[in-house]
Length: 193
Image (cartoon, rainbow, N blue to C red; front, top):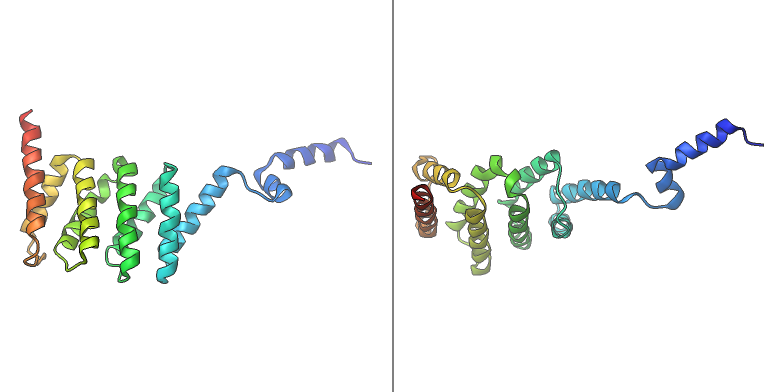
């Protein structure tokens, strides 16, 4: 009834991932993670605050599995995170800061190009009028940043931030300068060793 060609055709299509998922109703693990990541990124970039929150929850789950992201995913995530520094919803912003700490810890080697944006945005937030709990999360993100990146790069960014005429720091930036001094001292100490 079936020819050998039909049998070979069925065998080859049975080995394909698409056939596997359509026959069994599930996709292979690496395809699900890619699809999950795309969905998570779309949620994080949403204009709806509850979708952004859901995206951050999904991202936290992926970060806990120590999943490494592709270059494209990292670039898009950094762009989304840059926008999230100005998120108007306090719950989303607070969750973003928690996620940011895990993200920096896991992907610090891949974030060298984003360090300027990361550090300057965190420094600006330190000078903003925030709730104490949110301020503590910003400080935690700054601490993780300080411990995760080379001191010379941080020093250069801090000096650029301090002398930048377009930045108008308010009077609450004392912690910013303390962070600057701390990073500067650590940099100088590391040079002397």
